[in-house]
Length: 509
Image 1 (cartoon, rainbow, N blue to C red):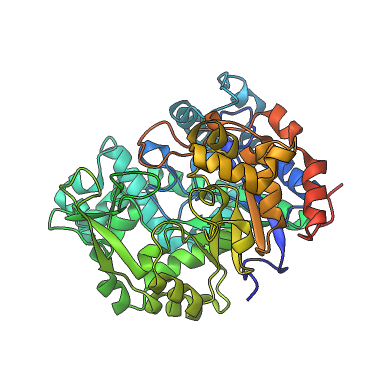
Image 2 (image 1 turned 90 degrees about the vertical axis):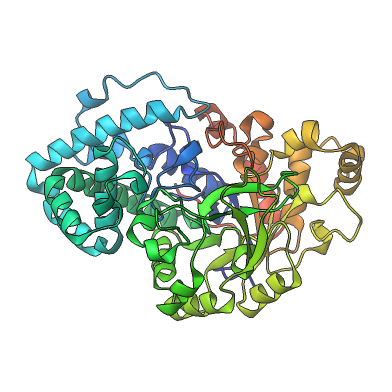
């Protein structure tokens, strides 16, 4: 079985979230910096660009705790593209703050992008040149956009309060109260719709750039959504909540490699019985929306679809959770009915994986993942060692949840792991740095897909780590500087890609 997320049976790519790209406006966006990165991917012979969820960020600035699973992140809006589209003027950018270029100041970025999008909306209201396209977009995306736009307008009107703390008629979606709210906040609702309209057009333009360069996009679909989200507010009956709209149990994972007390994520759990009753319509809409934005999708925490860890909401850690049966085959049969087979899904199957999880993946033809950093703490039969990989697999040097290879080597690895890795990667007999040896090992493996975070190709240390699981703040902010983008070893990576037969698309001029 070859990897269904690729048009060819053997390829490679880089993991870099859009927010991590260079930009003069405080955060990576959908403008020229993203296009330059696509040029680099193509020049280096890479067929795939993997991104994190493109949704608005939530608590802790995390894209895995979003107020909407359907919307795009307003921070990704490119000022240059709005300028080119006549939605901004040069004077609007004259007072751009002096943002740091090596990390994201999320609060400052939110204030700045909010101001620019407000100016763009005012210009849109005064000029009908974009009105027809906007009207068509609103009609096409109404199934999620109407609820999300009203949710955001109401959240702003209630000073950011969570939906379950709003007046009861609004929290419980009384039809008369919702109709009155739509009338009272009509302009604010249109403002949110406009923001998503701008992002939709900019993302479509970037995808066209990727297609011309022979680069496909692997997106990311989190298993859970945030409690304070338009998704839970609009479809409350699909979530396991009490009469006040609060969960009695929340999502997480038991103690593992990352945390001795497990991870208490805090997301509400699904009522899988209610979802099955309407053939998983909400989940099918999620998948359909995601695949309208990306070519293929990594399904986060696949293990939770076979059985999930339910943590009492009153517990401060995840230790006291219990395993509960998930939807299993029924959900993936619904996915197959929605988008055909093979499913364009990569299963994130890291952690405590049981034979039942493996069997579920096999029944639906879903490839899994292997992370090189997990290979060196055990015995020679460790399945994360490249010589034990299989074809239907995506092999990684690390993921967004790992330290960088260089950071792991110089800080996180035990003495045993370092000795094992040195022997396996041939570091004792070579001057090749550990990050390049790691990339080489993954690229040389039999796995259909090889992926490295861009930090590992650059050889960056722990300061470039994207996320530390279990840490609530200080994550997600790493950015690649313009100098680092220029310093990416394109020739070396292309040579490696060609040497191990991973395909070389035609580079863009």
